[in-house]
Image (cartoon, rainbow, N blue to C red; front, side, top):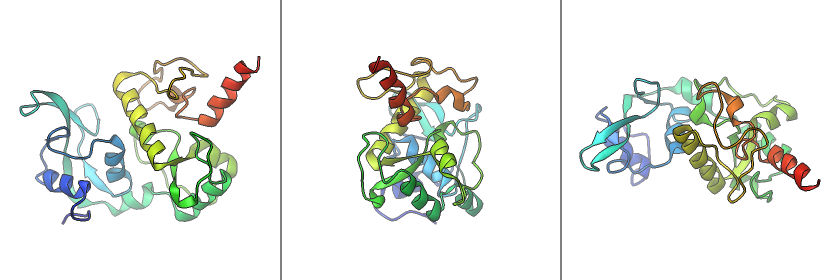
Length: 220
């Protein structure tokens, strides 16, 4: 049974994917953002299949597009409730994160109403090797700042685009128009694609630390 609301993008894509075959993201599926598929896995408990290298997608030649494209595939129609409960951020914790950051978007440092902000992991889910353990509302302020930031929906999607491109190309993201990394340079240097150390120095990993280090240089 389709878990999404009719007439939505995800509803359409489920209908395409429910035959449990690989489908082209360019000409068959409507969800173009990697973030969407992460939400399917991490929050909805939907089982996506992997390629031979362990990626949640597969590059296959598409006869319609005439080139190799990213394909997605459902592994099963079963929804995993365990995954759903483990991967979400508890409501109490989300409220606490917003209080810690005083409802401030990390990209432009503007304050918004709590409902306009999303709690996002600094380390992007696209680089996770496995699901994380349950986040608890008892996390300290320091733990929260080490792990989460607040973003508007549009900035969250922008972060996802940069992180997805980084995984594909090995070139790290930047603040629009400012090519500065406070550690390393634009080249990804993690020991493997799951290494969080490769994110350190990037604006999209920690906008606050990025500004702090840039201001040290400017103030000289």
